[in-house]
Image (cartoon, rainbow, N blue to C red; front, side, top):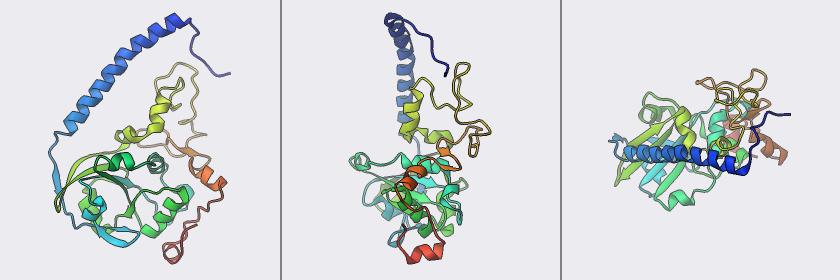
Length: 259
């Protein structure tokens, strides 16, 4: 039997909830203050003619805005030539959280994935996962301009002013958690994320972080949020539904529609 919190009457329970609520509200207000500070950051210009590769071929960074003023770009790590099971579980987790784009579009924001590696191969992965968001690969010739000494796995916000493009913010690692609804839901459950680094009571269950259960530990020592039995967790439902995870070679993928 799993460890559980102590049992109290509802009046006592409500008092404890009310005590915590004050801290939660302070946390929310601090988040609002941080967002306000982001809106006041300076920005840096990026070459709008920088090319990425999409379903129609090479297009400019400017064109990825799709006519909108803002672009939220999720930079997806890619392991070229590796099977689907070996692709980045963290980036898969992040991309899998993004389904409905109309709310962003209503605020003049375009969302797109900028993937490392060849387009045809990674696009097969996108189709296998059932993702519908705009998907581009970043060729090596463009990486110096866009990555600028950082690495894939980051989130970058851009602003378009006419034909000029500016980078306004970027983050990576745990800074990306704000866009992951699953983490938010897990954090308010009694067992949390069930990872080894969390401050939980003694004997609370830990699924991720033990040597036998983790896939690959992340840079901060935590376990990946979305890996099970040797592959990113959401791949299992796609396989069960009959979708092929055969990415093929880059050459073969360009000659056929992915499964």
